[in-house]
Length: 314
Image (cartoon, rainbow, N blue to C red; front, top):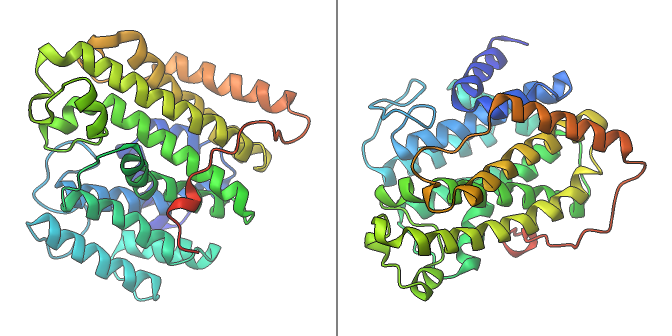
């Protein structure tokens, strides 16, 4: 673990304790490269949102460099620096991290640039009219990250990569369900507007308490969609190497637990941020271990619900 990897490790520990914990289950070489990819993804997200590690507002980016104030200009900066990294000309740490990981694993340029397209949707204030619009967003901000993670783990089979995309989409759908009111207060509504209209929830006032009961029904519907993607992802997980499968399945169980808690709390789901307790995370890990030991061969019975093909260009 060199200085660059150690810096990226610190970023993941600050930005996502759950993800950092799951990464510890990965083989060392895969874990270090995961740190490199995460650091770039986290930096991009924070720069667009003007945050630091997904939380406190920031007035400066998390790494040195010229700071620009407008989200559209920040996006252009990210696109430029990312293209430089993909061409082997990175100069800042998070872009050196991306440069190293894409070169080592021959990750196509398409995937990092596709990830930035998700941030472009935010800066353009994209409207999500139907479910397919929401799923497209989820692919760009999270599904394609799943594809890159699978490539780091040595996967080259397109069907398995599609399932990795589905897991990222499931994660993001769960995120949307958990953070729906916080996002709305920041002017971002990722729920399909058609669904809101069906329940007569005005997007501009969806945070009002009088809409909580109906909003619960919309979010439950979104979590039902997430479950389909989690199910599809199980097939891909079964094709991963042993410790990789354990780590990713643990992360899947922990994230799906967030959705379970949101469902259980119903209209009180957004009174405080939903998280999975440390003891429950350990239960998820041991459940994943038991499942991996019981799995004699990769399962193929789950429906092929992959949506990756809808948005990839190659």
